[in-house]
Image (cartoon, rainbow, N blue to C red):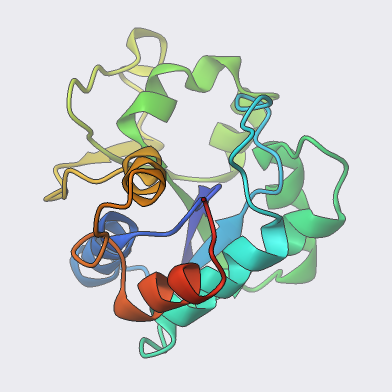
Length: 192
């Protein structure tokens, strides 16, 4: 089985995330997408708006409940923090030796990929699928690496930061997140 690993803080998950995951499911050989919730991203250590990982995981479960090809993955919850992709991938390979894991990253992450812990090890073991973002720049150090595959994914202009700001200023988020996520955020007074 080929599994796309969509890593992120998902703070919160939004319709843009769902669209990206759906694209890779339809346009590639990937058979499942696992949303890997990062409790603490090593590049985002000062995020004061970050919900606890279990709440973010639950929001993803609400968002994907009707798609059997989407799964949640909390493997990083039990790893040292901050979590590093190279360590997560190693554990996933050990736990699921018959699966092929393909990390899915945004173009902004590709630009800084050579700063990731042991990025060479990741590239030696995995293909990396990259969705281009606005202002996308390829990584000149990795330009001719055949393990990196870039995709022109139709993107919605949505960010988790934008959603949190909408909530704080009491603007609607109904077009930005799945309905079940909007309801949960509202009922539990999140991001206020």
